[in-house]
Structures are given as C-alpha cells and as structure tokens.
Image (cartoon, rainbow, N blue to C red; front, side, top):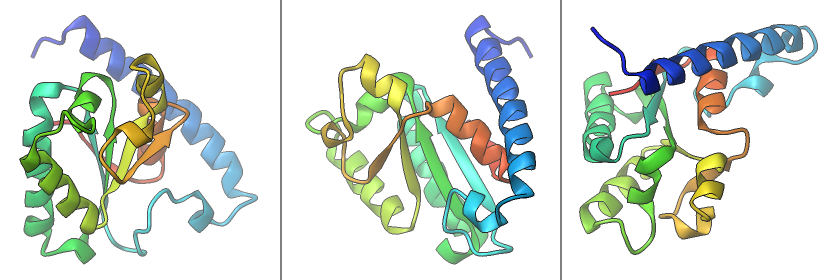
Amino acid sequence: MSLSRRNAFIRLAAAVSAGAVAFRASTALADEPAASLSAGAAPAGVPKVVYHLADLDKVDFVMGNIGNHFKGMGGTDKVHIELVVHGPALLAFKVGRANPDLTRRLGQIQGQGVGLNACGNTLDAQKLTTADLLPGFSRVNEGGVVRLATLQAQGYAYLRP
C-alpha cells in the first residue's frame, strides 16, 4: 500500500507525539492516580476508541461508523468513544453550513456520550471558535494530532476510516 506524503507526515507526527506523551505519562504515573490521566468517562474495563476525522469527504462515513460501533458493541455502556476533528472536516460542523442530517447524527452520538474534540490549530487557521460549530465541541488547544497521541497513550484504540 502506497502512502501519500501527507499521510506519511501525519503518521510520523502522531508517532513522535505519542512517544513524547507516553514518556510524560509514564513519569506522571508515579505521582498521579490513573483516573486523573483519563480523558473520558469510561468506567474501568470499558473499551476506549478514538476516531480521527480530517477529510471532509469522510464526515458522513465516520458518523455512520460511530453509530455502527455502538450497535456492534451492544450499546453505549459497552464502549467509550472520542471523536477528534481537524483540517477540512471541521468545516462540515460549522453552524449554517452543516446539513440537517449531520446535525441530527451529531446530536445522536453526543447523546450517546461521544466526546467531541475540535483542533485548536484548525479553529485558529479557519478563524473559528467552538461557538461557530454545532453544539458539543470542546477546543483542543494542544492540537488534534497531539490529542490523538495523548488518547492512544491512555489506551484508546485509534481508528481513521
């Protein structure tokens, strides 16, 4: 399988970030209980998954995957999911631009407990705030790729459909 330069760079950046975060997390574990390092509200033993969404043309596909993920696992109490959005995909969630179906689906997954993360770097580059997005998004100041690496270091399975 051939990787584009962009995908290779993103994977390299995520790997480097994951290494740095893992190192910092391992040193922090000696001083802090594990619960304080957890990003989400996943009870012990519940699988944790982070979906990475950067491509505008994959927004509907990822939203469907998240819904199917809950169904496949047997319900919202069986898996904790975070969605990290950056790059062009973030514009799909802009108030006034989002289509009614996406707005409905986002409300559904948010109601199921999905954490909605918007890359601070992308927000700045597009001159947006979370108030410009559909409700529920939290700004990730450290950036989307760092958030992805942090969640992976905390045991989240990484999915980029």
